[in-house]
Length: 194
Length: 194
DNA sequence: CACCGAATGGACCAGGCGGTCCAGCCGCCT
DNA sequence: AGGCGGCTGGACCGCCTGGTCCATTCGGTG
Image (cartoon, rainbow over all chains, first blue to last red; front, side):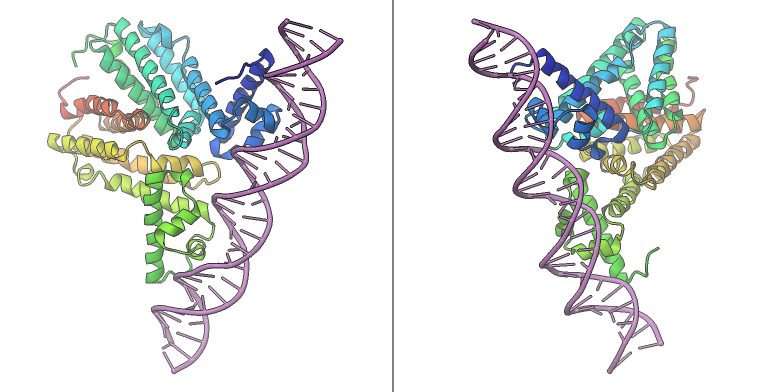
């Protein structure tokens, strides 16, 4: 698919994706045209189509991958070292901080919804993201000797998703905090028979 | 604001909103033009702008209100009669069924994200929706003699949101089921100390 | 150093879409 | 009955945006 990228070419491509992603984060997908991206990344129209021959959709797809990776990355180093009680607290705080900072915009979600109808290959990206996310949580729960790690992983993921969803819509992070803490309780204290 | 609507006018307006909402549900916001709506509702361009002088954004806003109302409506009669254990089960099943049927499209969410940047008045709509939704759940929890109804309401709402979010993204409703049941447990059995 | 393909610049195009406007119809109210 | 004001039809406009194309430069490799 990629026709031999020079080192320089690869750098340009990366610059485009990163710049465009930043633009999307602050403005929203619908508010950004190829020309905006062109301006923000100091590139020409031909470069955009040189690196993304299929046009806008292909570029958005690349951005989606970029953003999906960022979601997990932003939870490190906490996410990978879950196990002991303090690690959960640290992770919890990191998640809350990250999404409070993000404000009311959900780049990946917007991207997904926009691409999904016409672009089937976006679904695997988000599916994979959620899957490894859940898996990381499950591993953490297992290390914490939770009674049902799989279930805990799933419930924790749902708590984050739900809380963030409400935060996105209302601007209030209370739900996220409460949901997270509630889902976390059985993990932190495996003694609870429940 | 509304300049005297005839009975006929009101009917037309309603026809437009309902028809457009249906169209959005099956295709997604970005895939629907005013002309599509015009065709689907058998109206003319001038009617669209007669009833929604501010144009597309105003129409979308009306659709958002329509959809928000539908969210709660679709949970009736269960949502308003929550209390006894069977009522919770019925509600749970209704929610799962509704969102499984909805598929991977979230009209209200898409609408919100699209309007939010330029249209501040959309936020109150979804905020109000979430608020009364949570309130209904809290009332139900209270009637069920849950130990902390407020918290239960919030956690339940988050569970639904999170589960639906994951369902929307992956097409898998397992998370929704598990999250709901987990959040429901303390409500169904107030004896559990926590 | 010569060559070839990658990289870049930017003018240009076509179509879709939101929005405007005017002309004619219908129906309510006195 | 008559007229005023809401209601409807549909032609028309102009911008914006994604996408195309060709000419030029750059860079590495034989």
